[in-house]
Amino acid sequence: MAFSFTGDLGCEYGGGVSCHKNKPLVTLPDGSVRGGPKQSFAGWMLYNRFWFKHDTHGITVGGGVLDNPGRYLVLLSPINGADAVSGSPYFPAAPGLPFKGWDASITYDWMPKQYITFRWEYGYRHASVPYWSGAGGITPPGGNNGSPAQFVCLDNTPGPTGAGCGSHGGLWTPDLRKDEPSIRMAIMVKF
Image (tube, rainbow, N blue to C red; front, side):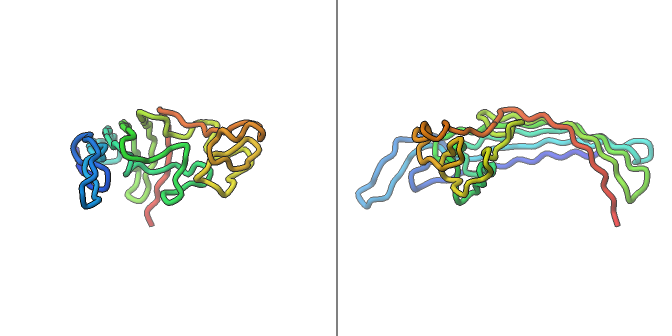
């Protein structure tokens, strides 16, 4: 048996964000800013691994929780080709915006030889806001239009506000979900 517990804590402060709690935003005489929305990260993971039948079978059970107000460490889904630099109006990251999540998984490994592993795994992830890709996907109907920082109209033209898409067939929205169940299977071979 092997047991693992990991915890992470962190925060940002200054420049309009606060480390420990939401505070009134105050501009000081020198022009610097104090206070602002909470911008922090707290998370933990707990996993336990069991081996049996002379270490040819293994089961791993575990999960974790995170809280990241401000979303500054949440990875941005590549909605319409977005990245951390471009950002996305469909999943903004800004001080004060909430993000909480948790996950759990169970994994079964069969290792008939030292050089090969057959793995079956079930995982479930949840977020407090729509985050995971659903069956409808995160790519606009006409493909990525090259303007990931703007909304996308149904005819694939960019729309800075989304309200301007009325004459372009309406506003496209990515299929984001709060929950993501998944089953994974893998074969790992060591050379």
